[in-house]
Image (cartoon, rainbow, N blue to C red):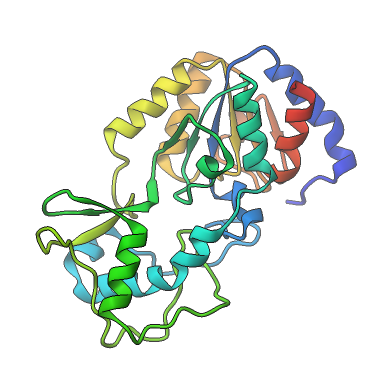
Length: 279
């Protein structure tokens, strides 16, 4: 599916703005909003194939899998953490400050909405900023875990140029000799505070997302293919309430038949344009 040009988008964006005018707008964002920040999407244009994604079952049961995860995660974490918010993130932060956006439900773990200045952000799939101990529950800053990794593995070198995956992962050349980080409180197993494949979104996060959606009178999906079930469930709730639903995504989504409008375009183009009209 081809995306629309700037000239072709002018009228649809104006139409979308009219649907949203005077409403409390909730956002549901996915990996597509961060591609212009250098973080690839899982699917669609610019995505990178993940033929063997890490599942929670493998992570818990297989020491070699955990070693592979932490090597790749460490190699990519610095570039992932250094990614800067793009015009789409910034536009949403400005719209929230102007009282137009009630909040953001994001499927991303990159923290870019918060770094852009948005304050009401529900990270339903967690965040790469934190690491938790699965034994005692201690929470760590990812930067402190990076220090521990480098102390335990002084031979490891982070390359200047790397090919990131959507979750900040990098395919390492080897994992031989790598010592995984452990909880400095109890010695237990650590896990990034993100939802792995095969895990459920924590109920408190999903309830928070539902609460935000209930307090809103329109929903905009930005940069999500809506393949993940949690996103589809939220869109279904909006559909049942009959509130306006607008989908901005370069490729078709599962929820396109429910939408009042679909814009086959990038979020970095559409969201700033919407902001200019609405403010």
